Length: 75
View 1 (cartoon, rainbow, N blue to C red):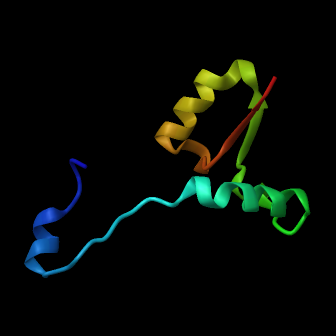
View 2 (view 1 turned 90 degrees about the vertical axis):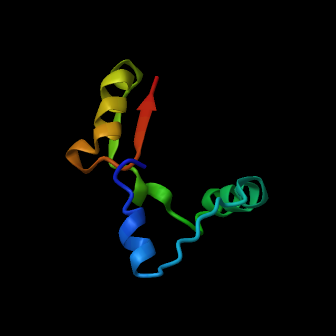
């Protein structure tokens, strides 16, 4: 939030709306569609690594290195 341009937004009289998705409402239908093959979520996965690389991959995700969007860690 330190870099959020609140001043310029106010100067231009812009309105910013935020919100959260209703995860509990949509999770089960979404998972059903993924399992049925209607939706392929693989486009979100940018990295697959063994569980041992978890701390390293967290840093990669946090710092957005290597265009990291989603990491899948496998045991």
